Length: 398
Picture (spheres, helix red, strand yellow):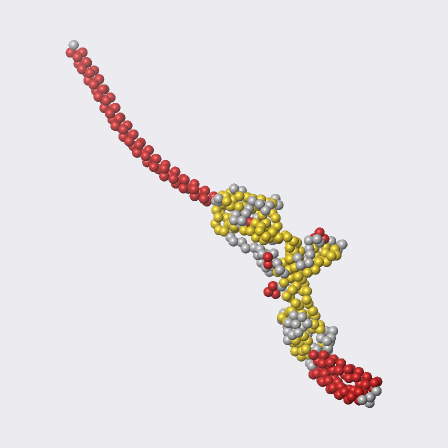
């Protein structure tokens, strides 16, 4: 009986111990769980802050990346102006007025007043010959004439009194007139010792030197009048109806960039060469600042028609693709590719007939390889002045 009680007491103690052990462990676990949950909440908050910061940084980097993706370009603002349709022909310049200078008498060169390249005016003395011989001849002719004139006056008085026959009077009269002519000829020869410029211009050639004995057949100088020159061109037969006298034109030269020289049609030949199918056109040229020279290779632009208020596109903005002219117009930082419908054009600009207007900005640097609808960034704007912009207005009134 005592043994059973002892066993029962042990079992009860065991159950109580297990119960206490179970309850204590649950409490500890709860505390641990609470601690872990608190730690998790703190970590989650830190992660949320970190994620927000990362997102902001990512957005900023994306914005910078988008900005970096914009292609830097240079643009110009489109303007309106004048442009002409013309016939372009090439030739060498000639002088309309050029003369070779000869002496009318023979003699020895005593003095030379002008050299090659010097400007000279009409009637200025180019050179002098030794004149003593001609001066003495003139004085001798003068004396002979004056003596004969005095004799004739006495004979005329006698003829008035019928003291001299008509035949003798006529002989005296003709002798006097002959000596007068000899005197004038001697004076003229004396004046020829001073050789003068027949026209104004520039000395092209000087072919003599001091001490030379010259003859009338010897060429002394060549004088070129450079104020007005001519360009002789040969136009195709199909242009015969488009060209007329006094029609405006201008001359340009690759050796004088950015300049053009006023011109006009002076002569149009009505004859067409059957072999070449061309006709001769002579263009007069105003030699501004004396920059043009005889023999210079030039381009002659004969103006056929003019548009006064045209939309002008610089050729530096054009991208050629499959024989088409394209430009990129910047609108809202986007480059729009536009195929040009071209009107008149010259070597530096073209006329746009539609889709582009004054004030639009076209890309002039950076458009090579650019695609339509590409985002661009304007880094600078260039102002383009066309060298031949006022080609027609300046030519009016010639």
